[in-house]
Image 1 (cartoon, helix red, strand yellow):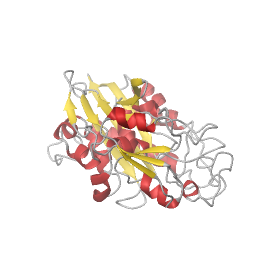
Image 2 (cartoon, rainbow, N blue to C red):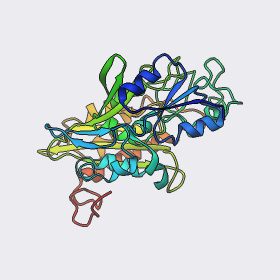
Image 3 (spheres, rainbow, N blue to C red):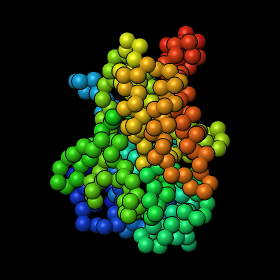
Length: 342
């Protein structure tokens, strides 16, 4: 590992000031991804700014019923928080579907949003990768790409975003709070990550030096239910081949509100706007679900080895929508036999 300068920040202002003017500085939270990348030689920061002891480790309920989740709240603490479990089960389920218990005890909310792709070409400095070294090429496009993107990819990059939590946040219409030397702003979680285009090295809309300080979760509308489902190669500690987060409200036997986000399919959590539009006001049922998801996934451009992801994502989303809209389904939130809690 290359030597680096270490700074422990005691306030947000101190952290952002320390970052300003240093092109290769990195913030250090739980370190579960960044330190691994430093060991591999992918990340080579000159300065690490430790933000793990900043007072951003709480979940607070705001006057309008929103939840403000501090950026250093651990994933395991967020998943088990009573208000998160009660109001946003999709988020609790997504967090518990990610990584291992040991990693969830270290990983933070802000760090989870900033984790980088697990594309093996990105993680190996000996291989070409436009994300790691712009202009070097994309080894995955004609190489090993079974796990890679089918939506929104470019000639420059076909990597996928690895977070489970971010998929749930996109479906929840969460906001990401950022602070830099010029002040504070918020960005919709669904817009926080970007598609690769011709700048795959830039993962997010975060400006240089800005620090994630919190995530804001709006209060759910009455009658809203939600769920997360993930398909992977083994039962635990594996990234998603495809995943889906659904937030849904049915009133007077029609879909009154629906938000769907996919994981494992694109360079960012993929908000399924076409499917949402098709389902709005529809009578819930298999025919409506399948028609809406077909409209969404018609935009998919699978590669040689990952066409299976399209029907996989479609079936996952249909199944979640089905169990959220059928009270007789064993996994419906109101089914008497359903186990409580995530």
